[in-house]
Image (cartoon, rainbow over all chains, first blue to last red; front, side):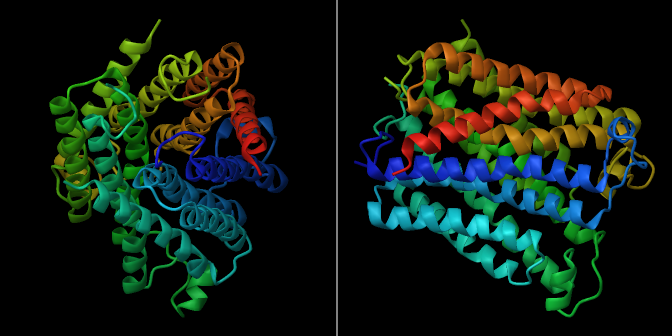
Length: 146
Length: 146
Length: 146
């Protein structure tokens, strides 16, 4: 009944999708490391030395691109984690909440793929996730304002 | 009594202010997009092409300013989300906790306005939010250390 | 039993270590401010003016280093906050969960020290925290997938 317990199916769905999104975010770091090592592009002088690479490079297009995709994640996904958790307390139906959580998760994964491939529809792919976060924020605020 | 249930007024206050802060953070992305489109300043080559703009621009002062304000949010507000949630478990009074949550929320909103307008008192406006996060962190650690 | 209540020792351990990590993250901002003021390196024109410093400086090696260490925190620690919280719901033993939470916390603190001192073993020190986040994400997803 709108609570943070596993017998609430809305909560159980949240737990699953929040963890999938966390996995998606934490995969960005080893992916960045892979690009850096393959292209031999490092920022820290000590890494340049360890890898016997050329001096610090701060403007490799591919490395900067994955860093922007990662940055976009950390600007958006922590907001989903807290909003999704609080949205459960507004007692949504399992049907609606699952659509929101699943659509958000899929749209963030597709957004990253779109970012890394340089797809020019990336700004459109950003929109569903943004609207879901806005919708949950608005619903929580309206429900709990006094 | 100090728990994460809606009959605890401290928790109910947290839910409201945490959602207001999330709304504040997620507004930064469309605001950045608005600046980018108005000033025709894009980072990704594919966006430059879509918008028929000039080549990637990484140093527009106004766009960089909003990006720094956004970055300041994501360095601070997720810490508030977790600290506020855990602070509830230390069983604070409703009076004190509401002052903390409300002051934090207002100070972050004023901080962003101050950042975007180039107000030189911005570093001072940063301090109340910082101290509230430190106070909650200290209270939680002292309460739960063994 | 696997729930978010203080009589669950796994949860009580999480609360403590999550707060220690939050304290660690929020210390990065005043530390950055200390470097900036000592070295008189500011990004915002209004701060340059207030401090009567030289024009905006964006490439001071020491300030950029602490900013990268801070960025690494905000790319990783919010994922721990949510993963640790959800991992509790998979009902781990107190023994295993405490090792994970404690090792993660220590490894993040050592990682920052390693980053700030330019230690070339920093990438290795990154690994334990990364694997703990991956392990918790995997455990949650496997437990709650349908």
